[in-house]
Image (cartoon, rainbow, N blue to C red; front, side):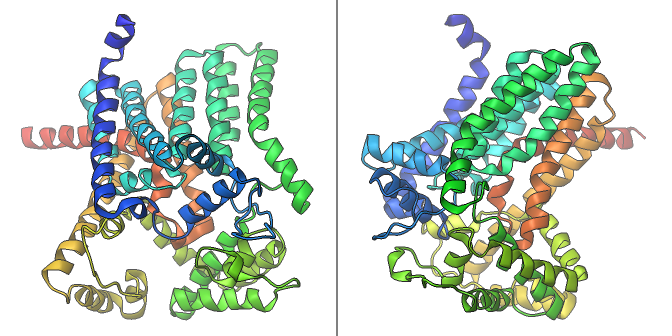
Length: 491
């Protein structure tokens, strides 16, 4: 035990400090706004809570608050079951939030370990961990009844273990990596996109070490697939039994129609994204089939079309067909959406929203016109005019929006430094180069689906699973900048 404490002293200290700081924020939010401060923004947290409570009460996975409890596949069951577990043991969601604080502290420690693996320098690894931890958006999400903190923890743990395999060629790291990947996919299926990447790099690693170990590779990958299947097959079979499809979630098409489709229309016609979205939802409502939806059976405010498009798979084919028609009619507008979405994915902060939710800032006016729309309509002058309108309430607006802009600049700097650090490390050879290439592809595997399939609907919290990788490379980017400055000064 003493050897363990001595060996992982830094990791334990980092994890304890991160958990202590998170607990301080938790107590502040609890004393300021109570439980409402942990519900996040939008309907996501409410849906998770309803799904968990209905399951606990024996109604199955349903969003309804009264009979008949119509089953849904809008979410995979991992996080609702987690909330149900918390409520069954503690009578509420205090246990869930405590475990999410521990998960966030765990991600901070994993960030340190990944950076140590890459650089083998404690000071650089510590900076990487700090850069991840101080993102207020991630802190607020970890303190909300939303799946992001747990999803990110299990995903980052899986990535870390697979990186260990690439270094040590130990079969147990592969199996544990796939185990954590399975848990992650049980919470949110996006992490399944890492499965082919794992298989390719596992095969590459085995081929480099011993080309004759084909049976060993096949056995390991077969075991890995079995592990993931244990988490996902029961839910997939349930969906086939109830809805006639093996798909894991009924909300995937809703990201295309109306979310992405309305953005394409807004860019094509230079109109409001909100108005385009409402129009598309109305088209969906016009195609509603019998029996009609009873909105009074839902306890959270939502538009009729939002429920129709996401609760089950009934309108999935129709929505995909409509999206394809809109996409093929305006490919240039889609390209513009993707360009802005890529910029937002890596630079958009979630720093202002939690301050409003926690009532640190109050009564802040918000414009319905985005910066993208202001620039599209009026160029630089339109952008400046929109900027001026947001600051009309004086010092309060300047302070609040200034804080958000600081977050934008911070994330842009981290992303730029990450790109520089990644470019510098790609020149490594052997195992180091293979690990860096794997990390690059893992970042792309996570980023591209969000950018291409959600556009400007992408949220900063979706970046959490790859943020430890980005901050690690950002630290190396800082090192490269310092070295370049020294060489310039020396002449």
